[in-house]
Image (cartoon, rainbow, N blue to C red; front, side):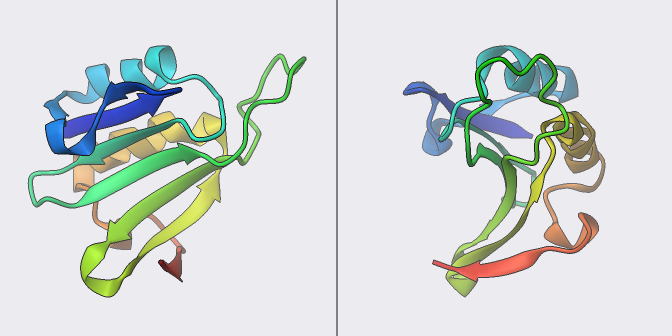
Length: 119
């Protein structure tokens, strides 16, 4: 897998995605990306497919445990179809979904019910 991310303007763009293993991808999500609207982590598998975890909203001030908040958009861009498959997931689900991407690739067909949104 190769990773790209943005944390308030800092990170690595998708055209410069860097090779990562599962541990590194999980660490980037936990340590490099704050729960601020617009921040994201993307993973590109060996087939060139992409999965992204995008904060659609920020974690509200005063929240001690945000793991239950469904404010992360899990997104699978489909450039050939002019849109993407996706759904909102809880922050606490993202590590499991990253692990799953390492196991099955960034193939949207393995990630449950998703909605297609045209861009």
